[in-house]
Length: 150
Image 1 (cartoon, rainbow, N blue to C red):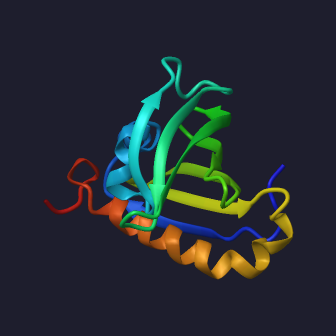
Image 2 (cartoon, helix red, strand yellow):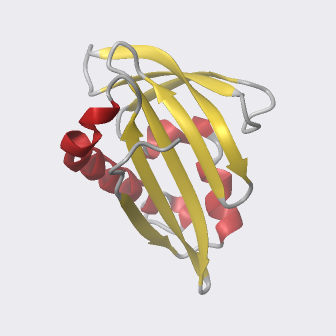
């Protein structure tokens, strides 16, 4: 179940939904666009089937990183991916990524909220989460394979 108070951020891409989905459903691309993703350590072979995971190192730069995992909760290929991201001891997050056809291109939407026991903090943390996700989608839109610059 999604935490209350999640805000959606979006970006438009000049590529078809299938092209965007190929990047968004490939966790090895995450360090290139997702703020805080430092390194992907391994990915389950059946990814992105529900229940599969990838292991990662996340952090805010420098030596302050942690290793944990992200698990698929639901997938509707090539439209949506619902994830539970873990970065213990900092917490867990519910993340929804959606790809919507839009004219000749597509729109990518992202929503995120904190999970128990930190769920009540989602409304207070939402401005930081939203800013992070806006920057992540800005980076995503700059990827050459998605029609961005070099």
